[in-house]
Image (cartoon, rainbow, N blue to C red; front, side, top):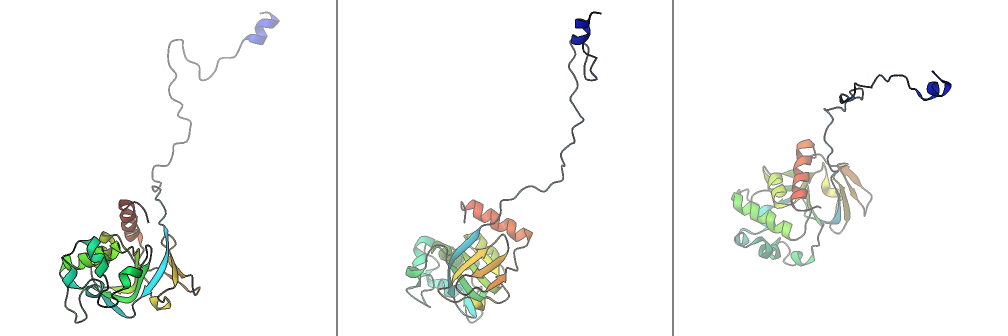
Length: 208
């Protein structure tokens, strides 16, 4: 063998194969984990003005039952009509309702028909209200609110929010900040199933 032959010849490779045969796939790379949790888009942060309604608000207050048969786009002008006839003209998109307890019936405790409760929450959503903040909800009100396009959150003591305060709801971090006073509190009802329900609702309506 000449010097030039020694320079240009190569030792056989461990990956070489007989002529005409394809190499098998390289299996030496580490396989990716298959049990990793799928990525979920973070929940948004909502910012709006608070409307505080004291200790108890009922869905009959939100929309008086005599207006329940109206289409939501028309019923929105009647929201809270028996408490403040001018409220629907003052509310803005992104505002939030704050109350200690949100009841499903009227002040006497009489339950509302399911379709009447749904109509009240649908009309409220049509006003631009983004979220409900309460210490306690009547049974099924939270689910009905989500179905109407509202985010219902629960606090231990929502009384630190007053009408006109600017409020920030960080849904991903599960906390509320009163931007007007600096007070803050944790949201108690954003467990994983509720986060998934809120995420699905926001996705269905096209965002926060």
